[in-house]
Length: 272
Image (cartoon, rainbow, N blue to C red):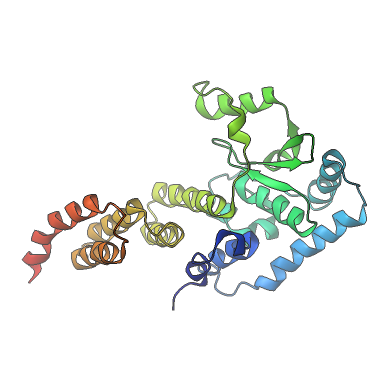
């Protein structure tokens, strides 16, 4: 049966709800997940923030959300086991109230969406952040570090920590990003974790979800084929590349994939 996440990725970005997509992603790993339970948790958190009646300014809205999500609910980053795959699945983040920067930020964004507040994600290099906008300015927040606000100097400090001073801050790093970019970053986090752990089955699952999200990316297709080849399933590797080339629109460059297929043809022939 085709994963519902893959079906959702066929929708226009404006029609994809981030919380639902993240929970459908988790369903493959946690098949008995109760989606309504977790969307209900987000609903309740939003109601608690609304009960504080914070007003219209970004600073007051930020303070109200931080009070509920951090002080009351206890949501923060998992500094004890950062590379635990559970940090990337929304259901487990809500259960444990711990996650990586992007999934903890996702909770803030989804609470903001329910309140119709302009709380958006910023795909900051090395460390996902959120921003609270109002007509005159925006506030940058790090949900991973107990929802603290960041100055430009703090933002440079994050870059120094992640990249040893090799990258200088640019305002464009704080531009808001859309649902597909956020989902891709979650999946790429999992891709890195599963590759490091040599969890090849989980890695292939992650690459398949990335391929559904970015169907014309040759990189994901070639990595899936390489995994299947490594397992000794040469025919499956070849068939996967062949299916990609057949389905690609004419304007997509498939030369590298075709070259890879050509190299595999001898291996496939040897099996006959």
